[in-house]
Length: 151
Image (tube, rainbow, N blue to C red):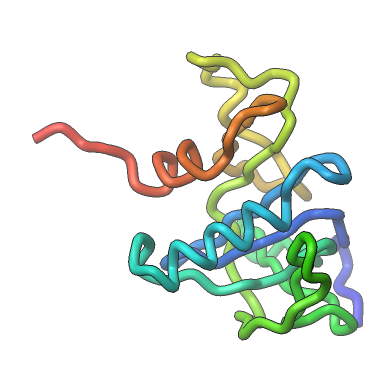
């Protein structure tokens, strides 16, 4: 089933807490690896909750000013684990995207410009985290999900 204005993109998506992390990047950039790391962080208690939404392809649906992510039916509940192949995981059928992580982003900087921390997908503005080529993605993603606040 297709909804007017929806799109399917090459990405992975993990629900962390109440909002999803949409992970984009070129083939081989580590999208599935980061998704699996977030899932493991949820299993170990480092994150309060982490569920797979989709791996490899993500269906994106704009709805009332928000972006909803879902897995295409053919791959729902599956994730590719490097060296082990396709594995089954429990999954969340729908999730609201709250953060977009761009792996191997050429505009990644130690202190990024504020404009580089937003992206528009299907007419919806979202927070964005660019991760540069060769950089480990999990630490900045965790920092983006749980920013340190000063008392």
